Image (cartoon, rainbow, N blue to C red; front, side, top):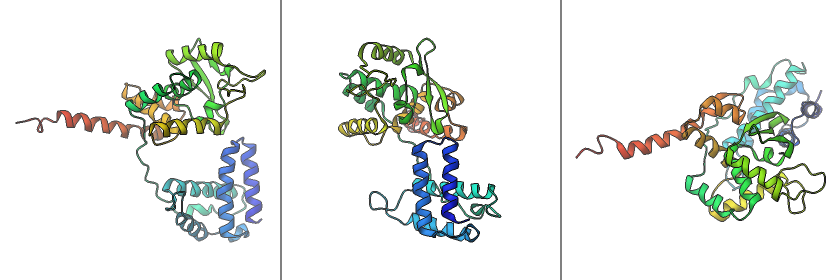
Amino acid sequence: MDLKTAMQAFQMENAARKLSARTRRSYQDNLDQFLDYAGNMALSDLTPEIVNQFIQWYGDRPGRMEDKISPATLHKAYSVINRFCRWIYLQRWTDRCITDFTKAPRLNKPIKDTLTEDEIARLLHSVRGNVRDHLIFSFFLDTGCRLNEVVQLDVDDIDFEQRLVKVHGKGNKEGVVPIGQRVTRDLFVYIHNVRDAAPGEDAVFVNRDGTRLEYNGLSQLIRRRFHKLGIDGRAHKMRHTFATQFLRNGGNLEALRRILRHSDIKVTQQYLHLLNDDLIAEHDRFAPMDRMH
């Protein structure tokens, strides 16, 4: 079997597993780049050296800002190739998993960026005259939901009595997320008094024409608002902000893992690093030796 045919079969398997179209497109981009680099060789000719050379070449390519691509982007490309190589090995189309003999590019995980309390206040103040937009930003900051989860939210997904929301996450996995009293109240008012949905439209957040607010539209709305306020980042920054504020307010790490729906608590533990900034700031204020005269 050749490389191109195996990649097509791999993507068919991903579709059967109901990976999201967005995830499959991302996979396809990296697979196409690897195929262009390596050529459509027989799987028996695929070697660890070819994978290593591809990663080296890929890492030297210019990124969006004419600099090298980010370590996260490089690591993601390797991850896709690794998944593919492991899959073709499990199909017994190769006699070994090629990437078992390669080394993943180093990923220096940065401390996740969050909104400051002043930025949160300015953000919510800036949309106070728009009920829908104010609720959208409040919902992000109160639940830690991802952008795609917010646009997929339907009215029937909200349990007002229990204050729970059913969300559709990565790989179409369903989860349940709690919401606070204030946002629950605002959701109820918006849905029953403000939301003007087209006939048959189930979405919570709708456009002026009553249709569902889609991914790109919501993403642009957030980026424009951030830009206007001089805030760096995108929608995911609010998920990081929720997680950090949850811990700062005394929330439990395991509870946070379940709310964010992380399969591994090590991912959730990254947010503990941000709390170190709080400790350092407090130490700077009250360090015993610094306060001695």
